[in-house]
Amino acid sequence: MNTALASLVRDTQVGERHLRVLIDSVHDYAIYMLDPDGIVSSWNSGAQRFKGYRAAEIIGQHFSRFFTEDDAREGLPTRILATALAEGRFEAEGWRVRKDGGHFWANVVVEPIRDDDGGLIGFAKVTRDITERRQAQQALEEAREALFQAQKLETVGRLTGSVAHDFNNLLQVIGNSLELMASRLAPDQPDTHRHLATARAALETAGAVTQRLLAFARRQPLLPEPVDLNQLAGNMADLVRRSVGEDVVLRLDMTEGLWPAWADPHQVESGLLNLAVNARDAMPDGGTMTIATGITRLDAAAAAPHEVEPGDYASLSVGDTGIGMTPDVLARAVEPFFTTKPVGHGTGLGLSQLYGFARQSGGFLTLDSREGQGTMVSLHLPRHRGPDAGATERPPAPHAADAATPYRLLLVEDEVLIRLVLAEALGDMGHVIHQAGTADEALTILAENPDIEFLVTDVGLPGTNGWQLAEQAHAHWPHLKILFLTGYIDRADTSRMPPGTQMLTKPTSINALMAKLAQMAGE
Image (cartoon, rainbow, N blue to C red; front, top):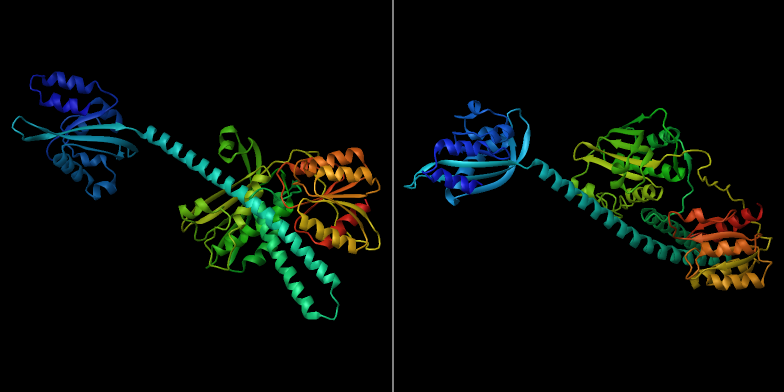
């Protein structure tokens, strides 16, 4: 349209009145003329609609008044006219200002108009308001970026879960082997016992790291129950105060009438303490930390970006007045092992663990941070809607195992080293151990040995998995006590546990295993 306009202006056969009628009839474009100095010399109805000025208000004014203060101060209007003269055309997009001070995103075309002798008459300027198109493009880009981030985290989560599972199996073998060595070592070798104790301590640390990786991968076993977030935060306030130091002021902002969340309370407590430590580290010179609870209601549109079900959520937030995050850091904040802390001052697993816990619990995590203004991290957990919402009873604390009581166990584990070490350790204690590497082998052994009391099985067996094995075994031998020993679990897996079954996560010690068996034997 702008090229045609320039041609019309140059065509002396077209009357001025006809040209004015033609231009003024265009409502979707701001079309107007500038003199060689940039003064507005004509104005159409589209320009009035976009910019808000009537012709009488703007003709005779310099077109720089349509620019933002920054653009005008930097000389953009002058550069536009210079570029149009030098290149025969200027086209670009940018912010422009309406009469009322509002901004809109404009597509602008400027072409010089010359007389028959080549002298400069002025400039033809055509402007379109493309704010809605730009917003749609930005929304699409944000959606694509969110999808990319979600897919990236999902991929990293699967990889992380697989690596953690493999490490848990290795740690199980190493830990049980250390226990065997310690049990067979003479007491008069204190140095050797000390080295074994050091190795076991390092093993516990490694086990904690793999559990955090499983949390990010949403593969940690959870024991959800109704949680009063107000009460939980209040109970932990003193511990948080002691953890963050005297130069940090702690504020509590509890929401009245907050409904209970459905989550594992121990994981919520761990997450709250982790967030408090992060907030403290973000305020090296002190500041204010706020622990808040709140209510979140999501409809289908609001729930979709978080990949959760629409409905009610209870939130627990920790905010600080610290250094905040740059956009680049914020985009990677929940990635495992990503940290801005110095070497030796952070694993980069805190937020990733909380992210995984939130997703595994059916909730989500949100982060709001501005560089130099602080950070707010919010954990949103599903609302608990009644005492019978599938509550899982938290087992009582295990009592000490009775070493004098021999058990008859079937140990099912496809990792040969784990199975052999566990069988040897349990055999040393006088228990009768049967071994199987698959569910089919296990069912055959159970059929041949109906006096077996315990089925101790891994979940991730080849072919028929541990859940399916437990279901079949429970149906044929209802007296059988079933214990799952696993290092990797899906979010919905715990709902498949037959009644009366228990679970231990790898790596686990022989003593912990025996304590669990003793507890189950007494039930």
